[in-house]
Amino acid sequence: TPRDADLDETTTIVDPASLPLETRWPPFPLRRLGGFWMPESLLPAVAALHASFVPAPNDVLLASFPKSGTSWLKALAFAAANRAAHPPSDADHPLRRRNPHDCVEFLEMSPDEHTGADIAVDAASPPSPPRVLATHLPYSMLPKRITGDDGEGCRIIYICRDPKDTLVSFWFFSKKMAATMAVDAGTFTFNEAFELFCDGNCTGGPQWRHVLEYWEASRRRPGKVLFLRYEEMLRRPASSLRKMAEFMGCPFTASEEEAGVADAIVELCSLDELRNLEVNRNGTDVLGLKNESYFRKGIAGDWRNHMTPAMAARLDKIVDDATRGSGLSL
Ligand code: A3P
Image (tube, rainbow, N blue to C red; front, side, top):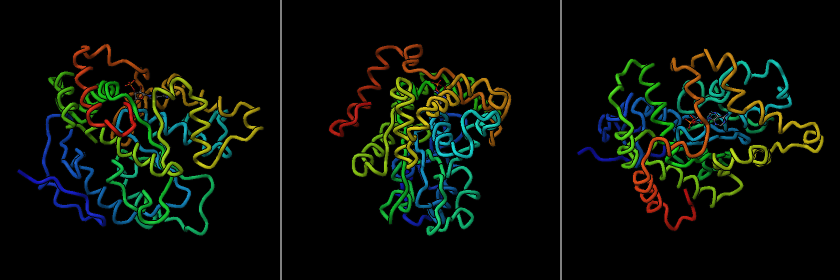
């Protein structure tokens, strides 16, 4: 059996073909690296990231397990960071013309744009507003230059979501991705996805380990890692946004509050607002996937429509057992 490998610091990642392989979750094959299942196609980009990414001192990195509310977090952080140049009321605000994923890109998905000298920012003259980037990589797979084990590191905002809703969201999304890539996922049932998810064998999985690593980092370095919950953001979006803005170093001023800027950003980034924009109804992303795929129900508890109580209890127990003693309750 191929051996799971740890990620080497300066990373020439070992030959991907030597790592354990998972092909049952369409549309793409996964390889296990450092205890996580990662898309095989991403591994060279992870290596490139380790080799050459240089964060700027005021960078903010949005981190998430897929299908946890990344698009929403990107929209909110982008709108907050860039509100001086682009007030949320602007008719041609970037978020009204571009999908959130085109406003804040994943570090690991465009290695040519986001690694190497072109992204290295002179530390002596950091840009203000903060540059906002994103990642789905586990904390332990991030370069030390980002996590701060090797210098200052950047600020990280993590969004976590109930694993059961994450799984449901992921299953629907995978089918759309498969259709785009002309991979036949017609026979991929929810029950199969459930079994794989419970075993941790899905992109970025095990989900609870992904969450736990960022949770622990947020406890160790509260000034550097902000841990948010999707469900809490649904309940109180404006206060979540204020917390984010403060953490990012751009808190809302009294006059902005008086002018209702935070509420206007929440409104601009709401599911209904984003979903109904022309770019998100009819546009496609870099992978050819329809932008509408990123906006579905956007609620807490949709798992009840797809899982039996026994399935839910089984997944809850796996997660509880794995996170016991950490102070994290998922
Ligand atoms: P559902 O499939 O449960 O509806 P990600 O952005 O990480 O891919 O996560 C996608 C999930 O976030 C989807 O969940 C999607 O509907 C939801 N979502 C997308 N935009 C949102 C927004 N503006 N507000 C709240 N939820 C949003």
